[in-house]
Image (cartoon, rainbow, N blue to C red; front, top):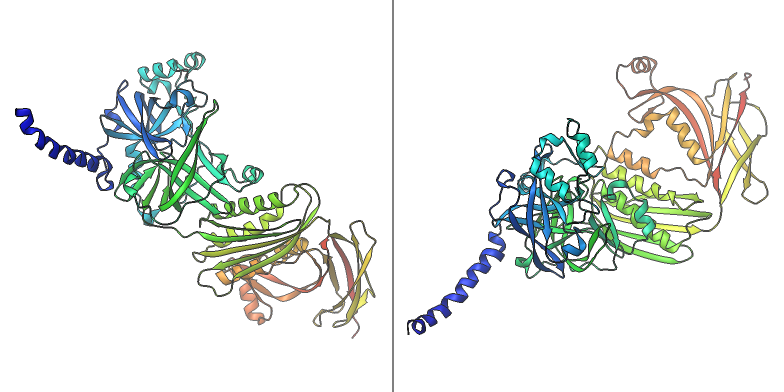
Length: 614
């Protein structure tokens, strides 16, 4: 009877209790759980981890503590765990698990982050939550850009570690007898190949050769091709499901070409999140789009299993990429750079995509995208002429920056792409002002020809000349596989040339012309303002021009990139003896440019003598 009496109350309280449990475990406003420091962790403790093995459903796996590696890096430890459950017995550690939170006694101890290749068991290194929480404390006004070029391996003295930890590592085949015997009586460090778990870089639309040729910045990322599309940029309706253990994507390119780094959320406190347990690249302060992610399947492999996933909705931005974690904030959004690449050649193709705005990543990603577009539409080996037109929109500047030039390429490297990457790098890293790029447009006209002509010799109508006299030159070119061609050029001897001296006339290509200018007037290449920098970028010598130079020594000097050709004797003397840098003698050049239909190559010089008779 008593049971019957209390049944209605049970029915009332049961949903209330369930609701309270749901709020405690799933409401994003109270997700900041209690944590456990490494000093409290001992071998043999049991716990669990959370991650996504399929779709977006968070699942648990079992964890056993093997020990703690002390001072794995400066003032930081590394927790060693054995993971079981789910597919882990078959797959081992899975790329994309980075950041999976690990709990002991329902306290967060850290994130799965490191592992051993070819280990028979799913043995992982866990980055302590204390080290990860430090990333959230970094003051946004004191961020530094630091780049770690290589993966970190653990190296420490054997005697500095707990003997029980060493024994457990040995039992799992992670330390071999030869290493132990060699190091037991030595203070020399030994090395375990404990490295950050590879972060899957899920790409779409890229040619694999462009991925293989990019900077070593991406060597730590596993590159996996997956045809996918980015989700909507609107905020998700159900963000309370975005919890520790959820998959997270860091988008670096989206559109016709896309690339996203996939990992796992470790910690969430209101809208602040920590993930990965190791860096993506360790670029420091950054601004990258953060999205949800869906796991399609797990690709099991002896060399390293991987989550095949694709990005979903944009929900925020990543603000820090540090040694111990990446950090971000939900509900804040980053502005990406709209890019358009138009390839005109054997096929006419247009690519539209967006890339992140970052001093280091933007030029590399642009190179990846453009190279991939070219490789997908044009031949890679053999002769080809390329004309590149680059248009860069800058915030706060009415006129866009325009750079155009032609190049010849005979190999698979597509080296001309450097000529559009270099100006972007210069703009983003200039010393004068913070530059915000608003748009990038590139048009590449490609022909499968060797459109080169070399300078064979030059002839003049006379060797003895007078000041102000016009001289006729004949420049002999040899286009590839064609007969010689003579190009007539008229030049005027400067009026102020000194009688009885000589005049050097040089006919050359654009590259040699620039090298000569760097020697004679190096100040021209050290801009003293942002506008001077832009002028230098836009004032690129065309590779199609024959360049004729008449060089004279002249009164005057260059200072901070500016020419001062007409200075009073007194001031000239003072400045010439100046005890400050940036002052150099001024050499006068008369330059004439003759456009041609070929890419010019070579250099020839002739000396003319100035008549000493008036």
